Image (cartoon, rainbow, N blue to C red; front, side, top):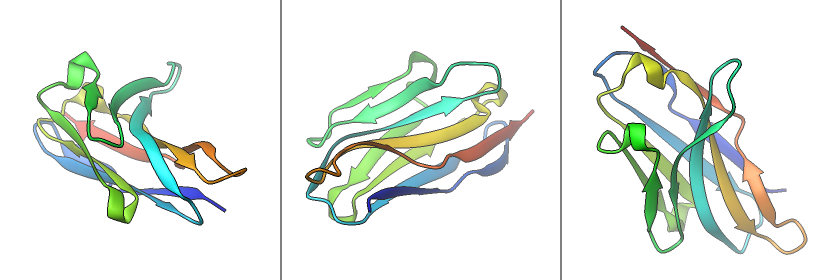
Length: 119
């Protein structure tokens, strides 16, 4: 069974940094796009950043220049380096991946990790 496991969330002061990780485990052939979303109570989940299998990236305007998405294909892992964090970055962050795994392939989601930025 394929699953995504996230780590790296926590509490940080404004201006600080955190690095999120998300590793895919299980039997899979390859991973296409990977990404990070975030959600706060009462709001829709929003796309923060994506990265293709070839390394092309895309970012939410409000995080450009502060967040960096990267991936290690050998480890089936995607990262989100978050610098210059702001209180408005506080949210539950979810990773997602388009996994190629035969009949078990498709879009998978992590369990979510809380990021809290204090002012």
